[in-house]
Length: 490
Image (cartoon, rainbow, N blue to C red):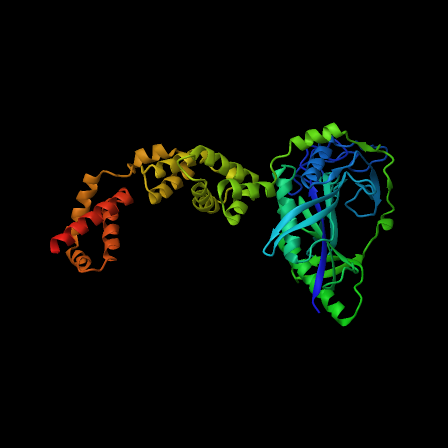
C-alpha cells in the first residue's frame, strides 16, 4: 500500500516595525548590531517593568491575516506561555493562545500537480526570543553568550491546517507565505538573517485513510532547502516505522544539516505543558471593524491575483507571469514599462526583455530591481526605438547593457556611438553589390539552386554594415538582387 504524508506548517515572521512588540526599544538588525544595545527594562524583564502593545505591529499582523483571507477577531487576548530558555529573559513568552488575532483563512498554492487550497488555522502575535551564541575555546571550555537585541521583536505566527500531502506542497506553501509578507512590506523575507523561520508538523498514514496519526515537529528551519530536506527525511523515517508496524513517538525534532537527518530534541509539548494563562499586565486587544476595513483598503494586489491577471490581461505564459510577479517591485516595474511602451510594443515583448536581457544584467551585477539605473520608461523608450526600426534587436541589447552600466538614455547612447539603424535602400544596395562582387563562388552556388547560401550572403551584408543595417530591408534588397541575376541566367 502507498503511504501518504500529512504536513502542517507553523511560520514565524518578524514584523519590521520601528520598535519592539511591548516596549520602545528600536528593532535592529540582529546579525550586524552590537550585542545588547537595543535593550530596556521591559525586554530585559526587570521587575516592575510593564509591557505596552505596539499598534504598528497589530496593524501589520492584521494586514497579513487579511491577505490570507482570515477573519480578524474584534477581541483577542495575550497570554503567558511559560517555558525557560537562557535567551527568554522573563522565563515566559507573551503570545496569544485561546483568542488569537485572526482565524480561518486559506491561500492557493501552485505545484506541478496543479493548484491546491491550503487552509490557515490561525494568525497570532507574540514576541521573539533573544539569540544565543555558543563558544568553544581552544582549551575545550564551552559557554554561551546571550544577545537580547532580538528579544521582544514583534513576531507573527501563521499556523496552517495539516492540509499538505507532499514535500513540494509544503515548500510551495512556505514560499507563498514569504511572498505575501514581502508584497505587504511587513517582512524582508531575508532568511539568512532569520527574519522568517519554519516549523513543520509531520505524520504519515496509509493512503486512503483520513486518520491523523502521531506527529513530530521539526523546529527552526531557516531555509527552503532545510525545510525540503528535513521533511523529506522525516517522512522517510516515519514511513519505515509504519511499514514495520512500530509506533512513532510524539517529539520535537531538530534538523542536523551537516548529517542530513532529523534528531530528537525533547518530548513534544502540548498546550498544557506551557501553562498558558492571560497576561495580567495587558488588557484584551480590541480592534474596531472600521479600522480593519481601513487596513483592508491599504492592501496591494496580492501575488496570486496579480499572477492570474498578468496571464489574462497581457497574454503571458504561466511561467512568465510567475517570474514577473515573484517580487512586487519587479511586477511594478514591468507594468510601468508596458504602459510606457504601449501601443507600439506588445506586453509579451516587454516581458521577454525584462525576464531575459534585464534579469541577465541584474544577475551579472548581483543587484535587485531597486538598484537598476534603467527606469521602466527608459526601457520602454529603447523598445519603441527597436520597434520603429531605428536600431535592431542586437544593437538594442548592447544599448541596454550600456544604459544599465551608465544610466544614460537610449537616445544619448545611439547618438554618441552612431548606432542608428540604416534603412535607406540606396545605401543598403551598395553594400549588397559589394558583397556579391566579393563572393562570386557563393553567388554562383546560389544561382545553381542552393537557396541556403542566401543566408551566408545576408550575414556578410550585415557584417559589412557593422550591424547597423535594417535586417528586414537588407533581406529584401538582397533577394531582389539575387532574383534579378537568376532571371538573367534564364
